[in-house]
Length: 304
Image 1 (cartoon, rainbow, N blue to C red):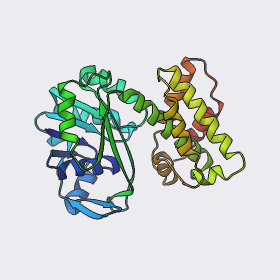
Image 2: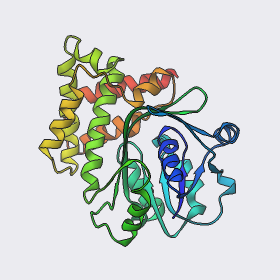
Image 3: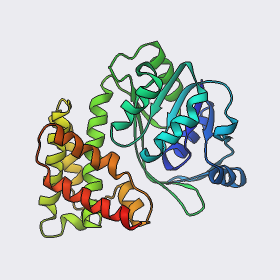
Image 4: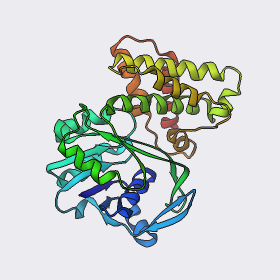
């Protein structure tokens, strides 16, 4: 299978490397700065087990040739419009596109651009970041990759994707209910991002602060009400696990959005929090805590 990994940051770099190491034909689509960096140093993974280096196949938008069987989109959500233009020449009649982005807005955006039949569901769970020299740092052993047809019908095309991905040295989950997985991932990451960015700290600091537990539970409840109104078929055991994970004061957690914010980077405010508010408004739901978070993030973006 010919695979194009759109992005070679923490997510794309890690999972693309694992696919390449498993023998898949993987090309990384990157910008000029990352292209030069990877050409000079290779794609370096720092994992809990040690350091590995891949000499990756690289491409820039201007040099893409031929169609790919699978395009995995791993950029930040605010870069999606440009990436769609970049990958367009690589999309052929049989190409499938698997976005691994935060939130859900990107699915409709990709379907509108390339067609509903070309977009499949995907998400990952990994604690990873980029180091100062562009190395991918996997901070914990967690490395899960979920994928499946958005309508739950995993036909022969999806079976082929599974065959390519399942032996890539990561924990793969071929799901026949990927939409619920996506809703639950959004519930987790948006709650985590909201409370960490608003309180400017990790979950341990928040939960041990006066009112911190109430803040976290309030944000969680608002988000759950929004995604349920939008079509999430609540799985009580799954949502209880998410709240339990977030509410453990012994385990300090932060989100990628919070880490980007503390470094002065652009953040996925509209895609992670703003989109929830738009959906809440559609159902006339009161979300005062999410509104406070959104104002906070908008002010941060104005001050960058």
